[in-house]
Image (tube, rainbow, N blue to C red; front, top):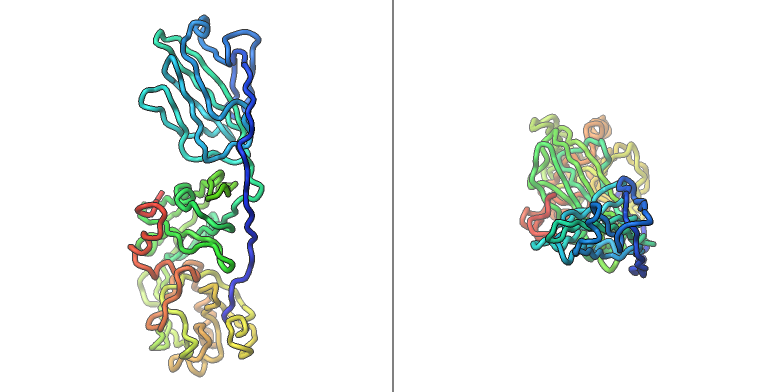
Length: 420
């Protein structure tokens, strides 16, 4: 019968410091290999000063000079600190910041053309190369190249996305991302998350729960209404290098694309003791069931399917009911981490359609009803319990649909929900 989630995740402080930089004069730069994470600097024994180069005769006469932060060869650079490039005696004409796999960092030029600053965050444990060019008022160019390395966190913040790449899920499946450490800068994390859909669907992120001894920190994304069948959903967690607060960093990115399958909505009526199944808007079957007895009531509200197992060993002790039952239960459709299942139960043979006699689960008859329902469902299918005394908590499974849209948006760290 019901079971509690168990598990403990150890939190550890992550400390790092920007390393000391040692500037040294550079000879003329002939080539920069930007396609690799560690760009090679090929140097000549002749040319201008401070790593400057340009057209023949330009470097010596150019009055423009360039400063780059972080300094050349700086190590353990914070990933959330911007790269800054400034020019004096001229204006910047081009700035390139190249990191892992030749990927360029984004940034913007200042209004006067004398400064440039990166936006977003850098990745952890990576070598970056900065190449900047400036021209003076006479059109003479000077170029400067610099390199630095970002920090590598000793105890990175780990995260997990609930769906699998290439999977198919029901219309009630939210995107859910969990974290093994406390997230204090929720806005920084949320800005690095993106959901795109085909066809386009408006949706929003919301922080469902904070990390505790019992639960991971968690942010979910859902549309205002259930997904439409056939929708393709792409999730991108561009989290490598995000400072989640207090210099705790994530150290990986993740991306997944999955598809919304046909619509299946199962509605259990706590008063009528029935389970009605609809596929793509058409009623398929109504089954007699027995739900939680008074005082041990089944949770009400929407509980999309988490997963399903052919058999599950359940004990009443796991939910504080003493030693009332301890047995294997078959065709178990999992609805909440606290232990709500829809499964085959002999009690349904006697009480199905008449009274509620379970310890909180939805019991289905042994005559094939439970197996039939088990065979129909996939994760994310909607299971909705009507006329129950209490509604399931938002974080107890995928209870996201039990709050209003305004309430959902209110728990976003970014105004409007931050739909990518």
